[in-house]
Image (cartoon, rainbow, N blue to C red):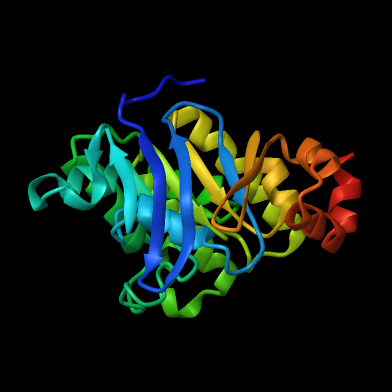
Length: 261
């Protein structure tokens, strides 16, 4: 496996985040490290999983505690260094490419923007647009399509291709493959994991899909009541933890749990 390209990791320390009066995160501590095995965050709807990713990406300011990148508070990174941070830490949200990209653009143009971002940040890029698309189960010829002509599942894969194109040190993924059918979802999950391992990219995944989580990560953190209540390999935690939230998730997806055994 490729070693980490940077010593800069993301570190959340006693993180409280949300909005005044609504604080889904109440003291979370977590490290996302380039080159280390992928990790995940699992929890019921509304517990703050997306809020955690947004705080790590610097899109919201902590109410208390801190998020640091290479020991620098993320929310204080100035305009001069923002480009470097955005290339190093890539966040793919649930609505990526829907509201912030001209839908008349071609897929090729969207992915090339990620490659350009990497070059501007001084990152070596050896992958082509075709390589990136094919790694996510899309033909290289797909690059000529305009964004408004593609499906939700294809859009999610283009968003991932653009994120990987910037050759990030860390990739934050929020429900990245919800629009794909189960077979394609697991195929693409394996491809993403292989590409990130080759690049030495650290990854944090948030998803409700327990099978996807098991396929893509080695360690998961269960979020409930604003804090992590259990952590470890997904199958072991589901089998051993007695926390009501963990038990509720396991009971809500019995087939997924059975297939992990």
